[in-house]
Image 1 (cartoon, one colour):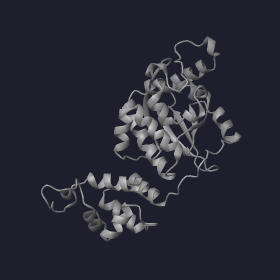
Image 2 (cartoon, helix red, strand yellow):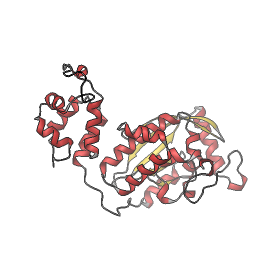
Image 3 (cartoon, helix red, strand yellow):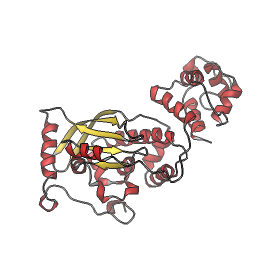
Image 4 (cartoon, one colour):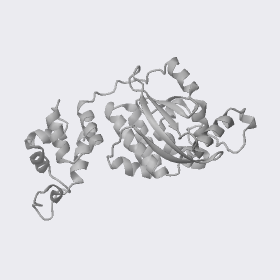
Length: 295
């Protein structure tokens, strides 16, 4: 079954007839949650048309149809947008690579005093500044093919350790990966990434099976850095309009706050030659891009 079908099936399975004012006909019901017929009734669409949509046999769908299904399945705004993306997405081209980061954007990164990096359409980390490397990890140490942000959140112990609320951060990263995957269905690199994470991490398998979706936007994250201690940082995502599929992610703290001072100290620490730094230990990377602690 396609991702569209899996998503619709998961969402109707999460709603009972009683939730939407329908009688629970049949005891026990053969289908958990809503039947296709019930979704079609609530969305004011024919059962045949909804069935063909769920089975991926509809080439196009109107906004009114998708809005009706969104109401029937009680989708939030992000889930509604995800539904639109699944219906309208085009298959990824084989061998398609992320566009190059412009020199102007790299110059902007270098001038920013706070951690920042550029994400590609597959959540690959394409470029970063010294402050981001100091806060998280020196991304240059990691092979290019393995720099997906969600991969590092799950498989790099240094990235796992820096997030105080790692489970919440990781679950949200999975939801954002699913949203990113909707833009280029059947992308072989994304399929490989999902497969790798599913093999290595039970939490990833569980959250991926939940079909949650979340857009890249912003928020606040609590962190603990081995050099400067506890941090509360605001992160936000800015779209790079000059290049399709790239986003600038920044981490900041209110001026005068303890976290703002900690970022200043971290920047000073990062400016020292590596041999003179103290307070943070490096972990060796093996040939597979994993860390010896995971073996």
